[in-house]
Length: 226
Ligand code: SAH
Image 1 (cartoon, rainbow, N blue to C red):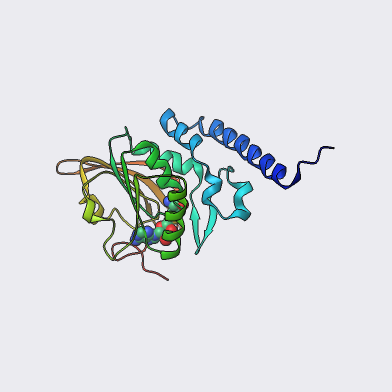
Image 2: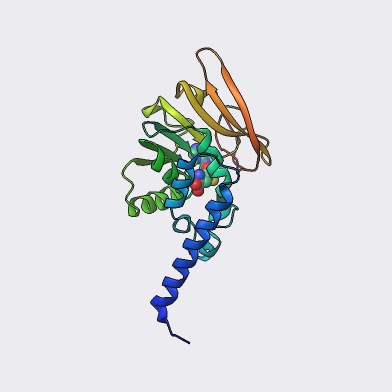
């Protein structure tokens, strides 16, 4: 038997994760049509956004805990939500719920600029550090204020909310351009419908993408903290 030593063990587990990532992308290919989204997910190493003990599960298609009672979303949901924003590379995108920063990284691969907002200071700091270490220069991570979203840099071409809201928040629609896309889980605290909302001149159009479960969006226009 060959002894790889400590560095060898690390190398083998990195190669293992790379194979797991390829398998996950093949699995997502059955349900996600947008090749650009799949390519972006093949480029971003999800294991770098989860606590080290969860690293070996990074490419299972499920959410994982990231501390502070929050989770990094299931890869299929990340892909579906990203696809629903219909990004071409020129957009300014807002994300609510930075969490680990993984979804922000995927968005940054596909859009011009990403503004992401998180209400928990600890997660904000960790995500900022991870994204900086990975060299992203087109992502701004902000600590949330009492106002939903980030009106200072509005309007956005697309908005993604990665926490569950009781209804479509008017405040967010106001931060979107006419023709802009908002993807948001809407329903109860425990289960929701994932909606793609398009802001038209004088109305909105809504498409239901799937059933889902997100942690609650906290705020005056959303859920109260418990
Ligand atoms: N997109 C994340 C996962 C998000 S989990 C990722 O890729 O890892 C949902 C996050 O939304 C949690 O971190 C939670 O703290 C945050 N959140 C809840 N209410 C919020 C609000 N009003 N504004 C910003 N972030 C909020």
